[in-house]
Amino acid sequence: MTNIIVAFSKAGDAKNIRNILMKNGFSVTAVCTSGGQTVNSADKLGSGIIVCGCRFADMMYHDIHDCLPAGVQMLLIGSPGMWSGQAAEDIVCLGLPLKVHELLSTLEMMIESQTRRRRKRREQPKERSKEEQIMIDQAKALLMDRNHMTESEAHRYIQKCSMDSGNSLVETAQMIVSLINN
Image: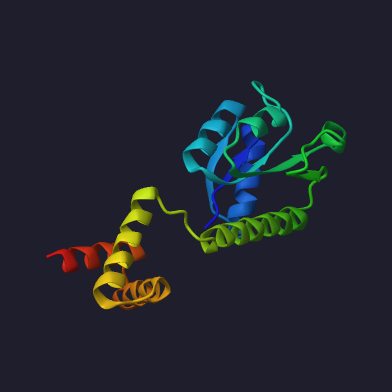
């Protein structure tokens, strides 16, 4: 589930938006009335969406945006005169008067976008540390020497054992090294 922070300078506005979102099945993680609170909440969560107004007592929306962690998006709600031509390209803007269906559909679109990005990141191959790569290479060298395998055969063997056992490639390589060396 995506973390949603609602941030408006007027507590009543923030509560109204929170209530609308919660009635429609969204989970609101935090409600903030200052820029500082918003940035702190976003830092704690690390990812999510901030639904906010343009102006706070301590900051403007662009100041908050500049302080956000990489995994947090901003949905700005305000008068188009406040942000037209000035909002960063990664800020989604909704003008006033606010229509509930526009708010909900925009939020759903942003959540879907974050989900796709998260999935894409997970599907990318993980970078191995130098020590992990050395362990895998050592296991392959032992298999090549002891079982007269080629490098690709040894690698496939470690992969197959890893998949069969449900362990990572590195854990499987460690087991191979410890078994052969004992």
